[in-house]
Image (tube, rainbow, N blue to C red; front, side, top):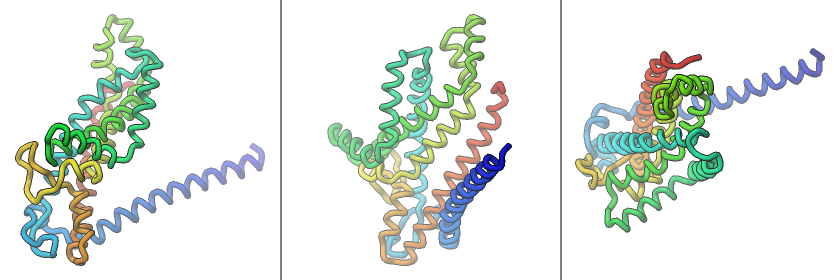
Length: 283
């Protein structure tokens, strides 16, 4: 190898290492800021109590309504989006639909993925107005489901496309139908990646505020039915940071800390499930 090539290779390695350090440093800075400012204000009362009168003026209470509301909104929306996204992702493969149709749908999904979440909130609000439905848990679930669909479908589609073609051809040669191949071969082979796709969509949904601002509303109570308004952690953080009271602003960082810990817990759970699912994959 010539000296110029060695210098170029070394320079590229250094640039990659610097880029990695920059990304890791930014992530650590964000997480560290949230934890350092949020953990001191976090208490058992804040996690287990509903907001009381004057909570946003610095008085007692907690964010249990926002925690439960966020889990209901993101969890139900993730489940609904997964039910729709999985068959769509399989349908986008070459064996099931014409290549031109799959390409058109893929471009549309890419456009929807880049659409700002406030657009989904506005569309959901317009749909609710036409149906005569007010801000509610159901409205928030619908908006978040629409937000998650393009993310989940595109991620699942890319994961399924990585499955070895030899597996499908072997299944077909043994007499398996397309559905049987999809269910017993492709699904098991790509299950770890599909879990990651669901996690990606869940993280986007639970941390989004714009999509649920007009559709889910906000309430100091825990929703008991789908027609009740539901609070969420992103909106709780927004409202708390908007007050001029320092103690309430400190609670905003505690709420952000809770949101961060929820995403971290779901991420660790998904990795455990994905690791167990890898025993079904063929390397």
